[in-house]
Amino acid sequence: GKTSVSTPSKDSECYDEGIEAGFLFEQSGTDTYWSNQCTMCSFVDWILAPYFAEQKKKLGLPPPQKALWSIDVWSVH
Image (cartoon, rainbow, N blue to C red):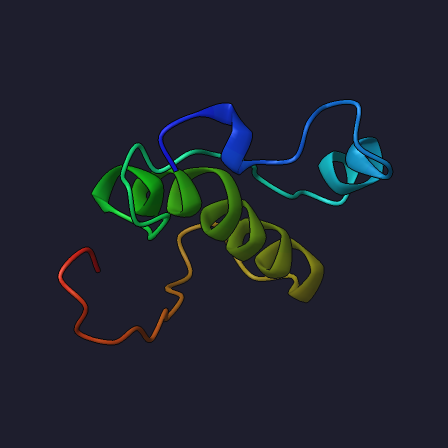
């Protein structure tokens, strides 16, 4: 959505637990609530890349080790 009303309030039950678990609450700035180029970039920067880095660390792989993210052909991807 276009405003913070489309995401949980900071006063919502379990909001803090969601943040601690790595949830990212972000408005898309659109009427559709769908992901767009900006939210996809946030997803990659704040969720996917850190996840890959942590998995490489857990597996004892070097940081430059390649990782594969398989996605569909939606235009924002």
